[in-house]
Each structure stands twice: as C-alpha cells, then as structure tokens.
Length: 261
Ligand SMILES: Nc1ncnc2c1ncn2[C@@H]1O[C@H](COP(=O)(O)OP(=O)(O)O)[C@@H](O)[C@H]1O
Ligand SMILES: [Mg+2]
Image 1 (cartoon, protein in one colour):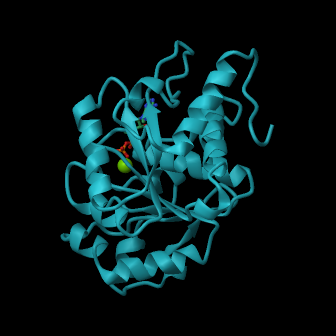
Image 2 (cartoon, helix red, strand yellow):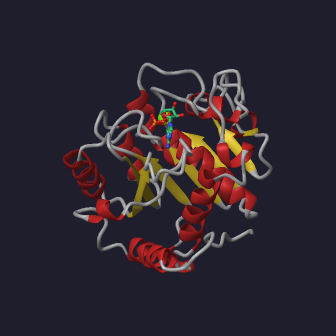
C-alpha cells in the first residue's frame, strides 16, 4: 500500500480497483445524476466536527470525477486545519489566503496535482482571522473566478459546528455534501449540522456516511447509509434516487456498475 511521507494517500488514485474507489465512483455517479438544470458547479464538503473525513472525501471525489473526464478544482477552505496539500502532495506556501490578501494571483496559487484534471488551491499560510477572510467579498470573487476555470469546484470546508467558517462558505456555494462519520458522529450533532446549513439557505445535496464497516476489510470503505436518513435529507430527490439505486443493487448479484468500467 502506497503512502506519501505524511502517511496520507488518495486511495482512488493509488488503488483505483479497490472497494473504496468503487464507493467513490458510486458517489460520483450520483452527483452526475443531478439534473443538468440543478447541477451544482460549486460543492462544499462539510461535516459536524473535525476528523469526520471531509478532506479525504473531497480528495477522493475530486479524483474520481477527474477519472471520468471532469475538470475539477479542489479548494482548501479549511483555513484552520488544512490538509488537501498533503493529500495531493503539493506545496502550501502559496494558496487561498495569499490570493485573498492580494499577495498572489490565482494563477500562481493554483497547482496541478499528480491526478490529471485535478488542480488544487491549497490553503496557503494559516491566517489569524480565517472567518473574516472566508466571509469577505473577495472570497466570493475568487470563487467566481475559479468557477470559470473548471467544470466543478469541490471545497474542503471546516466543520459546521465548531466555528462560523462553514456557514460563511455555505452561503456562497451552489450546494453542500454533509459527511457523517458512522459510529463517531452522534445523531443530534448530525441533525444540528444539517439545520445550521439550512439556516444559511444552503442546498443539501446529500449525506455521505463515512467509516462504514461492512466487513469488507477495506479500512477506507464508506458508503451512504440508509439509517442516516431519519431526519436527514429525506426530502432530497437526489438522495432518494440514490437509495433506490442501492436497493436495486442489493437485489442484483455482482459488482455495481461504475460509470467508467
Ligand atoms: N473511511 C475512513 N477509514 C479510515 N480512515 C479514515 C476514513 N476517513 C478518514 N479517515 C482518516 O481520518 C483522519 C481524518 O480524516 P480527514 O479527511 O482529515 O477529516 P476532516 O477533514 O473531516 O477533518 C485522516 O487521517 C484520514 O486518513
Ligand atoms: Mg480536513
């Protein structure tokens, strides 16, 4: 199993035939099912707390989408605990914060990764005032500029419940994905994270259940979990379509078909 010096790696890139990579292809396919009129161009990946798997899922989903031909920019929007640069093994001396304070152009800060069609905007130096920067008009302008440079922006966000940062970002993106860490995120926190996103008018695309152990032996395995539906995203047609697909698959033998198989 390969890993970078910091021990983090993107399984979708390193082991594209793994069960985990397949789970990301399912997530990708479901994003691609969102009707073209409603298809979001900027998606915030957030979760109730730290360590739920936001950065992991952002990096793997970006990779999986790129493998299907989508031009992706992954933006490190977590200015407190940045990690996208480690996952994609790019330098972090210049990034979003440098652009926001006018010390670098977007061109200088955006970096091509080892994954074709994935560029990363790392956090840049950690600022003393993350919320102020993320809530600035300049941040909106930067997102608008980035939109023109790729098919899809995935923004690795800070946790919803810790600080205001995620809420500030949720206001200026098209949609959000809420990551829930199974066995780790208490249900009340999952629900209040969802409510906080709704309070700022965010569109919740769905819930991604991370760390689901299905006895596959794959420690990186995750998938959507039906039991998380209660009180979460039940009304989302995207989510319902996804469940429908899962039910169908459960009754059919063999590997689920992936878009690029
Ligand atoms: N499904 C998973 N199985 C095993 N380890 C995971 C899984 N998802 C995330 N991790 C690990 O948990 C840690 C926190 O994940 P991370 O994506 O950095 O969370 P966040 O960005 O929400 O803080 C990382 O070391 C990551 O490699
Ligand atoms: Mg993170």
